[in-house]
Image (cartoon, rainbow, N blue to C red):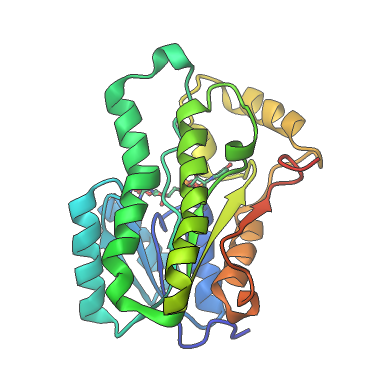
Length: 247
Ligand SMILES: NC(=O)c1ccc[n+]([C@@H]2O[C@H](COP(=O)([O-])OP(=O)(O)OC[C@H]3O[C@@H](n4cnc5c(N)ncnc54)[C@H](OP(=O)(O)O)[C@@H]3O)[C@@H](O)[C@H]2O)c1
């Protein structure tokens, strides 16, 4: 397939889960791909697995690093056609357990960083181009322990609408892609104290179709939003969630 032929695509958080599988699918569709992550070892492992990808060590919650990332990318590529702001802090805990430092870190990674990354990349963005922000079905439901996380995802999904209104005259579409519970290493990073099997059982009960999603199912949706096939899709929130947010 060649739906992304000659397109330049940046994926934040591309060393694992949905970001890694999306990098694989973007490459298979003909795109040139760059990914970010915080761990040098994780980035090198992806280079070994996927081959021809650019890798940048960059913390999505650090505003200066977002600006440096945009400058570094400009030195490699003539333009950017696709940005998938995928990196996310998935910390879940009860209200009493939140402290300011953990809250600020989550908000920086999930909303402040992506906001300033989009700003920094604007001079490089092509017309047409596609920005995909990673939301979550959690923004639409009231899941216990998801308070700060769900609020951050509601905020970034709001950005998909407002920035679409602001940027479509420049040929830039912005859309949200909202996973439901998806089988990735993130499930082990929620920090809500549940064991792996107990957590999976609880999650399966939450999903109307009775199973977790796969990274591939999310990556296929990202390919659609990234490609010109979705040229009429602007400012939306694409739920890929087994029915959690709708049934
Ligand atoms: N899995 C789910 O059930 C689910 C459901 C709804 C929404 N989502 C959203 O989907 C997105 C991807 O999640 P996933 O399930 O694929 O998680 P994952 O397997 O844990 O992968 C997360 C990726 O983001 C990177 N990352 C995390 N924090 C980062 C930071 N501050 N700066 C740069 N990179 C960072 C990680 O790399 P390093 O740790 O090496 O930096 C890794 O590459 C997230 O936005 C998450 O909120 C996931």
